[in-house]
Length: 168
Image (tube, rainbow, N blue to C red):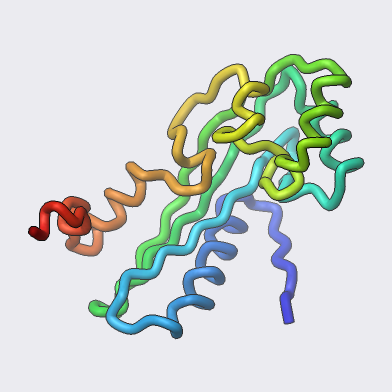
C-alpha cells in the first residue's frame, strides 16, 4: 500500500521520499551501498511533483513560462557495511523560457513532462524550453553527482574506488 507523503517544506519532503526509496530497496541487497533520490519543483509557494495528466501539465507550463522555480533533489545513501546513512538535499534554480501556447501543447503531447517532477526533463526535449539554470545540472536530472561524491566521502569512501578501471 502506497501512502502519499505530504509536507509543505520541500527539503523535508524530498528527504523523506528519498529515505523511503532507499529503505524500500535496501533489504534486497546485503553489504551494499544503497542510494535513494527524489525530486520536486517548488514554484510560487507550491510543491510540484509529476503532473496527474496532460491538462495539469499544460496549466503548470502556462504558469511557469518566463518564471523561475527551485528544483530540490533529496539524496539518501545507506552504507550497509558500516550501518551508517547520510542524507542531503541539493537545490537548483530553473529559469523557464517564455513559451507560446503552441510550444507548451506540443511539449505535453510528447508525453515527456508527464513523468517528471515539475513537468519537464532537462535532459530531453524540455532542455530546449529552459533558458538557464543556477546550480547543479545533474541535480535537475535527479542525482547531483558532486553531492554524491561528497556523501561517499562522508562515509569514508573515495569515488574513484568505484571506477572499474581503477580496480584493474
